[in-house]
Amino acid sequence: GETGYTLTNYFADNQVLTIDVAGFGNYTYQLDNGAPQTSNVFYNVSSAAHTVTITDANVNSCGAITIIDVRTVDYPKFFTPNGDGYHDTWNITGLGDEGTATSVSIFDRFGKLVKQISTSNESDGWDGTMNGRPLPADDYWFTIEYREGDVTKEFKSHFALKR
Image (cartoon, rainbow, N blue to C red; front, side, top):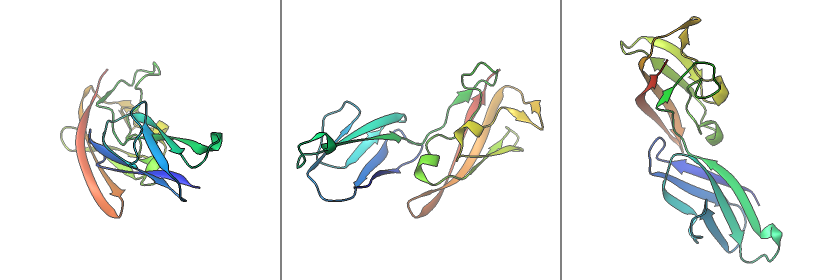
């Protein structure tokens, strides 16, 4: 059947991951290389990419195992837009997977809006410029409105642009 997941506690180091499996079975769930468990809920999930292995004990074939990739919702604490291919843009990670894609507003330390970006395509993140001109190395602030289940929430924090 269909397999998916739901995350709660976005942006926290204790995100809650619930695995959703359609159909009946005797399932065990394993997060990364952790111990298998019968509960489909994982607590205190760290910010990272994870793999969940779902095994149905009622099926004795290779079809008994389903593996899904899971990403928590987070943001980089800094980025370095210098063209070296590492940390060149800044964006929220993991929200596009959840179907709660939205826009992020980025502000300088004086509260001036410098950029709005979408979370649906993470490669379209902010490159550290405004109107084509590089902005200085500094702390920048962001706000994001997103949906967690049926609730609209707002999150605010900051990150560093390093040059």
